[in-house]
Image (cartoon, rainbow, N blue to C red; front, side, top):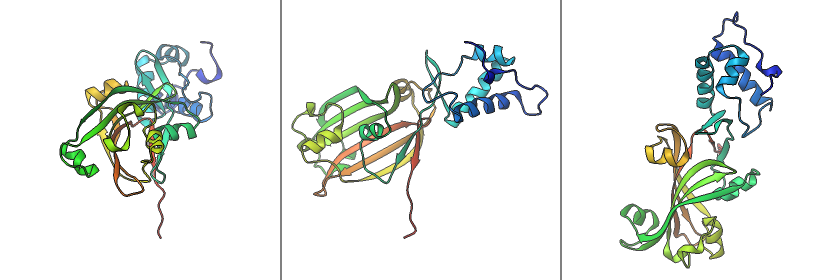
Length: 245
């Protein structure tokens, strides 16, 4: 990788610690679009050589920017400029619709999908009788090639004709059969990713995330969706529009 103006040696006479100087250099480069969304930043070895600092200093600077959500590390691939998504609470839309509106390509990888008997929690959330059959759709959600969230959706069996009626978007399929939610109740809390969830998302065990539980209601008032989603904390900002009236 050729040297460019960005990677001049840091000022060791500066009173600021070297890792903070490097953080500022990289942060400014991201904000000024020297590095665009999803661009890889140079490896630690290259930064260390060109800036004439130790790899420990480089690693500390990068970890700080990862914690800020500006960078994201992918196992076996390197460190990239994070593409953060603003998740709005003012509009009810699907993941696929959200990503498409932002010019990104949504896709899913199935973890599992199957017919099962409703659990007590699902029965309460969906207003179903104990033992009622439901469809379960469990997926990893991607925007372009980046993992974004894990999604575990439970749908009453009357909403769709078959388990395989869902191809990519659950909301699209529910719309086709006149059961799309028109309103929803959501609960949000901060979490630390477990080993299982971290492995699926390609993040570290204990990394911060957001857990969102959603109950969606159709026009006739019946609950048609109970979804538990686990969002990467370095990829999402939650936005809510508030009013005093």
